[in-house]
Image (cartoon, rainbow, N blue to C red; front, side, top):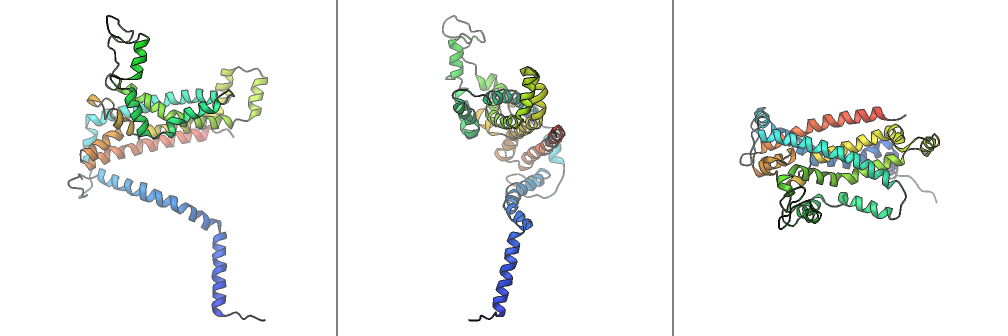
Length: 322
């Protein structure tokens, strides 16, 4: 039986052939795979960012959200605000101290977890829990730990004689029975929670870097009789320096832009002692209703973080061992 090819059949065959060629094209597949990510970034990051930039150059408020004209008056007002300057100092100070501590502690934990010991999997699970726990829930837990009356830290300090108790006993740290962490020691308390929050991520990244070091390099250092500290600073650190910088960069971005810890624990503290840019932008723009100043404070973080990211990535690229 002989089948004849009709014009409609030939047209369908050509269409199917073009479709198969399109599906086999790497350029088309790459574009199709990247399209959802690009759409996500444009809709949930790009549009809000452009809107925030427009608001920052206007005088928009909750009552009047229209953008009538663009000017620099909002930025001048924000820069002259003493609370903004204090928030900027707190953001930089909290970030630098917490991330420097995180790099040191992360290296210690990563080196320890690379060794074999009983219960290693359980210790790794405990270290990862802060990162897996939602930040709001973790901050609420720390709010109880820092409680001015029922703090378990204060209870331990009283038992070992660091704080005062009933009677004439005077503690080594204070005569009072409580430390009042979020009042008297607000900045220190916030930094401690930030270290607790970001340490697991830093540890995991550094463990990946330590695992990538070739075994023959370690064996050569051992054969040469090089001690631990010399091996670490002259061999290990140069090899994982790009990984350390990447971990530091991620920690800086997450810490500098986080407002949840401040919002849950102190809401800025007395006299804005723990206020940071992210929380102040929220309180100014959303709670205070001043959209333009809130947007200007938030947009101010963009060039700071972008410049820092470019510097750290450039250093990391130059530090790569080829």
